[in-house]
Length: 310
Image (cartoon, rainbow, N blue to C red):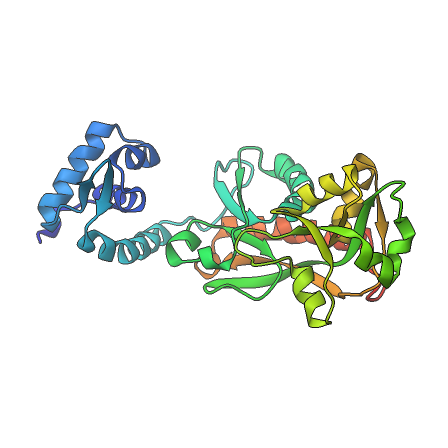
């Protein structure tokens, strides 16, 4: 291969083509016209000596050679970008776009306050929130597109972890629920009909995993993919939602909910912020992490968790 025939823009085009397996989508990703992207593909085919993308029916698919190039090329481009990374981050002038992955409860609890800070400090910076999809999605290709992850649990490969805030779980029911405070008792809890939250990538509600370890099975009448959906259902039915206490507090007035302490104490949960190792010294990432940590500390200080069973 003659390296003189390659330039950085051609490698960027190759990265987009390999990620999207589509000339049209690749062109949109990197701001080229479709004819320009087609021309880049033809040049790459000539240089590499492989078709890279082949049509199979109505779709385009990567050749084995193209598949083998995806990971190494992504890492190489990351390294090249790092060479030109600025030493400072001017939040007031930056137009950077950050991509965060978090469950709906984290969006509800963290993002309003975070966006207030961001609007004051960095009005041109934009945030994209990607719905939580579980640890299985964290292959190298996906991880390199994410700036921050908010989640409970252990660290993900290639990411560092920092604590954001603590929470505990409680029962959410509509106001004037016929069982109400009786749900504090084991018998009433077991007799009630529950809405479970099974987020994408999980097999069951984490509460049910914990309860089963205690030899307890609750009556699940409905399964939903998000905590806020569970609260909306609980607010309009007699179903009971076993969800993070801070989320109930944030929405109890709006949804006319009340909080009931459960008869079983699952203890304290800690929500964490994860950031990629590759961005450890990136000034923009450092700025965003400080903003998120400050938001988590505010939340932690707004309502202290008294012991393990508040």
